[in-house]
Structure formats: structure tokens, C-alpha cells
Image 1: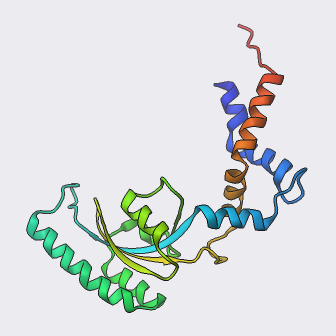
Image 2 (image 1 turned 90 degrees about the vertical axis):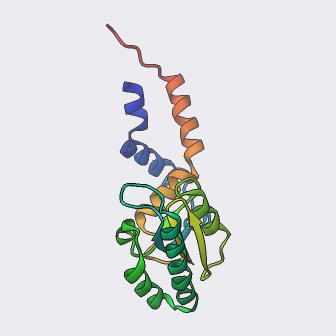
Image 3 (image 1 turned 135 degrees about the vertical axis):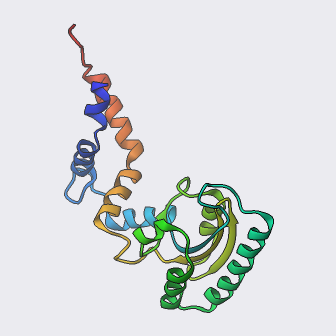
Length: 187
């Protein structure tokens, strides 16, 4: 447990990463490499959720499902024609995903972070495309956004991308150090 906490504490790992791979590090990684990794492995979408699940987590009845589908189709038709401001207005009016409020610039994610149907669609879409899909949570009217936006590629994202890009090398370094400097516990 001690070894795990010493070697894998996030702040300590970040210091090691910055020492080796940061801007003034031993083997610095260029901003373009970090940005390329980000754009190759992440996507960004806004969406409007028309839920098909009640507050208890139960799927809607057939009639309620039909109503939700009709509403989603109607909102989708409006969203396809909407510019970004109009899409945001539609989100404000119709969205039933409470998490969207925390992500006003859209969800930024990689594989394994969203439900499969949503994730697959997001990675398949072109920037600016609007699509209607269904998941276990309901109908999603999705709009794919660019990642090349300074509101998105923040310093925190940059650090996370550097960690992700170099994660295998870092893990190998830690493993080698663990072998080179074993810790013995006196009991």
C-alpha cells in the first residue's frame, strides 16, 4: 500500500511527468504532439436529452416512449437547422440531462467514458453535424463540436493529455525504479 501511494499519487506523478516531459523537461513533448494526441483520441459534443426513463430509473411505457420519440424528432428537426446559439436555446428549453449545466462548452471525452451508442455516434460524426440517436437513457440530439477551441484545450486538459500520452513510459519508469530501489519493511 505504501509503494502504491508513493509511486502513484497523482501530484507526485505529475511532478515526475513535468520533470521528464514538461515544457522545460529532460525530454520535452511539444505542444503540437499533445494537441495531436488530444484531437486523435477525444471528441466534443453538446446534446439535448429527451429522457425515456422516469425518476425511479424505469423505462417509459409504450405510450410515453412514443410521445418521447415524437418530441425528440420534432426537436431534432429544429436542431438540424439551428446555429450554435439556437442549438443552445433548444438545449435550455428541452434538455433533460442535468449534467449538461456543468459542461456549457459540451462534453469532452474519449472512448469508454460515455454510453456506447452516444460514444459511437460522437466519434462517427463530422464537426458541425447534428444527429438523433437512442440510448438506454433516451433520445439524444447531438451536435459535434470542434476540439480546437481555447475554452476546451485548457491547461488542465493539456496536463491530462501529457499524462495520457506518456502513461506507458511513466509506468515503465516507475516499475524500473521499484525494481532498482526495493523497499523493505521492518516489522
